[in-house]
View 1 (tube, helix red, strand yellow):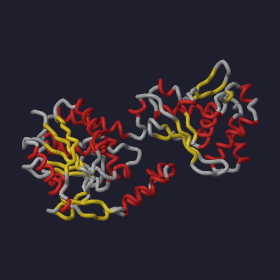
View 2 (cartoon, helix red, strand yellow; view 1 turned 90 degrees about the horizontal axis):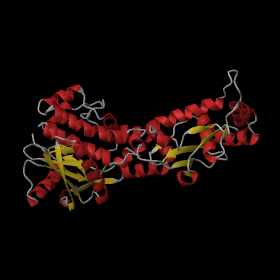
View 3 (cartoon, helix red, strand yellow; view 1 turned 135 degrees about the vertical axis):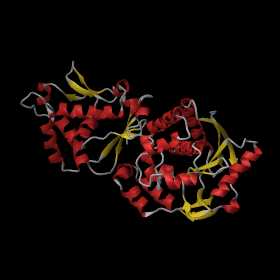
View 4 (cartoon, one colour; view 1 turned 120 degrees about the vertical axis):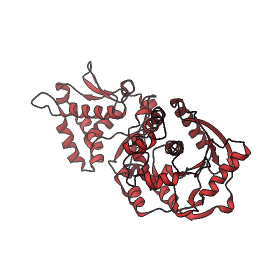
Length: 415
């Protein structure tokens, strides 16, 4: 079976820079795909008939409000980026442009006619304009859809992803939606039939999760999976080798959307940004790896030690003699960080920190335990040891001090 030729085009409202990101990523996916799709791209403005476009309030339901604005999933992000929360609220209250599925498919038909595209080739329109179905007015705000046979047209809604999935480049969910529409088309299942009979109303991490809200899409992005039921359905019309090739593309998208962003960790070092969250006398701080787009998750004790080591190139004492001689100045500085993280009294913080430098009966000490836990968490987000060396706490055997060998001038920023 020959590869399906797919023409990716954009409406005028989807900007060129975002389109180029999608183009580059799909070309990368195409290199993994031996059987399925041959992509073609056209960056010229495609015009949606304005007569059929109307302003509507976005259907921001109570479920989305509770999950997006109040859930633990977003809490850490909003605590550190309070301005983003206001941006999201404003964006979701703002009226959006809406048009019918039929109008969007007509843009594809016009492009097909003007560019002499073969009937059997697929056209996918990327647009920020939201949608509703004239044939069924209960259908609206879909992430994308295929036209019913015999036409070979599709559209993908490209707006609002940055608000629903903060920290994740919208290229990835847009590309996922394109692949989903194409595999459904290749299976020769009508899109409305597929949506009504084969989708999972409750998300399970399968490509066929209905995902009534964009908030739920993250689950299937991060699994990159196809459940047994859906796999058996696809195998009725698609060769297994073609499905395996398709799954390689899903895996690539999955690798870009994981919490720890492991893929990014393989490409080089990242700047470490120490963010001051409030203006208290002893402020709460967080450590953010800009290049990996992830926060270092540590408890108050661990983060206080890590912040001290980032701020002090000379390090912390490691040997028994050094531990017992730890200066009041060192304890006081760590206690300032600890008071901020625990939001506790400085006197109480100093007492806690002093206990960390106590030698145990077995000859060990709490600082060594803390160091090991910090390095364990760093390994989770930076699996490449050669890169992790820049951020790990290491023992300088000659001086008997724990240190972080980061290039402070190039890689460390205190905000």
